[in-house]
Amino acid sequence: MSTNNLRKGPPKLSDAVARIAPNTASHEMSDAFQIVDTLSALAQDGEPITVYPMGQDFAMARIDAVDPDKRSFILDLAEDLILAEGTLILVAALGGNAKIQFELGSNGSLLPGRARAVELPLPETCLVLNRRAEARLESPLSGSYGARFVLLGKEFELPLYDFSLGGVGLRATPEQAYEFYVGKKIEGVELELGPSLTVIADLEVRLLRPFRTFLLGQQVQVGCRISNISMQMKQRLDRALSKVQLTR
Image (cartoon, rainbow, N blue to C red; front, side, top):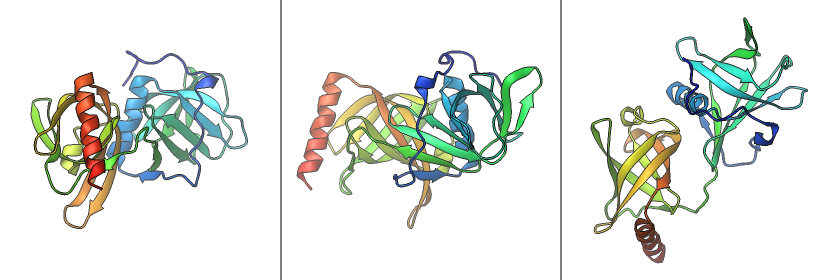
């Protein structure tokens, strides 16, 4: 499936993203559905991909399309280049405060008639590094902290386990998480921050991470950036953060 509308322009060397250092607090994404969704969002946006071939300087590319049935994706290189045989490391930004990295042992195959297009297998796992711009506070165990919104005619009410001036973390079941992907925009979200404070904001999904709890079993962390909020609502959010900080 082609993804050419509303994409960014061709990637430049200045768009390069550094590899995730081994000593950073990154986590592993291994859910195939989330990997397909994340790479599809990168393709839709035309996000620059930095390719680190073994023994070569880095090169710039974009993901042209993702094929879940064939378990492959098409990488469109920004220049004429024959990738060296061996391991490839691919890195891309996920919004302003996160990035994704994955490693492939195969260089795939060139597409007929497209000198710069290479078909590669989807990665089994990816590393995700989420660099938060503001420190987030965990929601107190007592009190009402959650997010309510309507998406495609369905009503959602998800627990809120942490929040900051720049974003919130939601907890979803795996079934609920199927409705989200990195880059998904959610408008008119009611953020309930205690028994008597509600903030209205638009959110953009920036992170999906599966985890398991003893009581609830398999869950998914849905990390969201606040993409649109009025000054009045931002002041309310700031007061809510200050109130939680004072109780600690």
